[in-house]
Length: 319
Ligand SMILES: [Zn+2]
View 1 (spheres, rainbow, N blue to C red):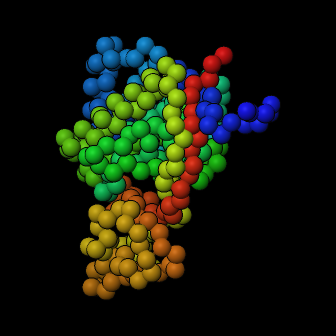
View 2: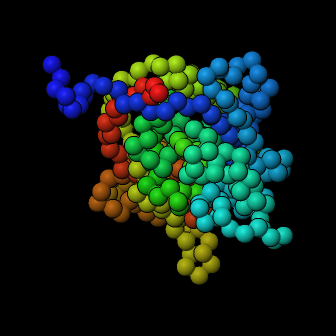
């Protein structure tokens, strides 16, 4: 017998339907799995659009895509903070800031009731990261349930959490009510690999499958999930005078994203031949190891800790 007011721990949490879903590619113009997958989706969208979902497909940075560059003037995927989205536009404003405000008008406004229900932004990395969801929340049950649904035999699927307040969240997916970047690697920028594009296509298919089943009333069981939370970024060792890098990622660390690092493990191999080791006491998980686009940002790798998050059973909210 359930007493009045007592919560049934097995009862599913009701969440609003995901009526409007945006899939974005080309936010970085040289990350080609997303660019070409988006074009394929735009070709086939009419036939495949599921009834319960209004699907929007967006080529986020068409100028950068045309030039096959990450961006033309400034990194579009750092332009979605509240401050940048509300900054005044002049003739000198970088193209990507203008474009971010256009995308915010199309898919947002960020933080408003008019925003699309879910944004899935497609990215590639040169790092050996498999498939990662990157999100600003470790308690967005929609994103966590979708990630859990994406388990596939061909690649590891992980959930990465950047603990940044929504107003300072800088990437495109933060414009939606729910959102995540689907980051897949390794793939060199400006290159398309069939295996990596295939993983992305399967990831998008499973994401849409989950959304349709959720909207149609299916109940999803609660579970526990591993979540990686960013702790810090690590720069390359540099010459103090010239600021030029003086070391590369150590061969023992290269391609070993998400393999736990302990104190004393090799991090960098200096061009002089010296090995520089992991200096911290707390073991952490490396990711974005030797990401090609991050040399300019001063990031050789990022470090995360892993924790387990309990996710509740959920179903669509009935009016
Ligand atoms: Zn990217």
